[in-house]
Amino acid sequence: MAELNIRNVHMHFSGVVALDGVTFDVKEGEIFSLIGPNGSGKSTLFNCINGFNRPQKGTIKFNNVNLLKKRPHQVITNGIARTFQNIQNVPFMTILDNILLGAHKRINFQSTVKGWINREQRQKEEAMGLEILDFLGIANYEQKYMAGQPFGIQKLTEIARALVAKPKLILLDEPAAGMNEQETVEIAKIISEIREDLGITVLVVEHDMNLVMSISDRICVLDSGKILAIGQPEEVKNHPDVIKAFLGDSADA
Image 1: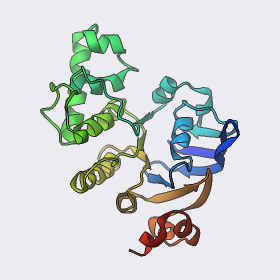
Image 2: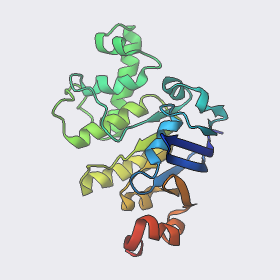
Image 3: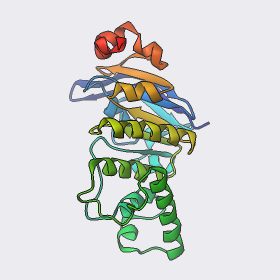
């Protein structure tokens, strides 16, 4: 079973505690959201999962594989892809070539840029990229250069690049950040379809509470590196510690 298991994870930076004994599971086929105030440890946990940070204590396993012994590119090979809070697109490349960077476990960067791969393989990878563009609702954008594209297109390209890696688990770091209301509704729909249509487990960090409450099977609330609550949306929404620390009066909206 492709389940993410996080046990007693501790992470500190120069005496500042970022994660303090974090423990939870993300079940296969689940949309699981991490919420909390800025500085609560959400992105740090993402970085621990995909190999950018090494916690001082604890274990992180996916599909029974110890991720703490893997480098970031090996984490991808083991079935986990992610997007970033700050867009990581390459402006001088086309949208399709930006997407194909996510297939680097099958083709490397130089091969993508200069076409140094077997034509049949290139066509196969391009076909997958085009399918993902269509899935995300941005078909016909493949030959447009990334520079100057609207923010929403750039965010969707990030998601597409993660999807082309063929993950079993996708980590979405604030996918709705900077989006307007209509774009946020579309992102919510896309996240649900990633799980429903593609069969990919989703772990989301997000501040938009309407989005989180509408798509999540379960929610974990972090505050100062500690877990305040884990449960279904309604449970978390009405949890007194969560109301006090994060949701405030919006929990009654």
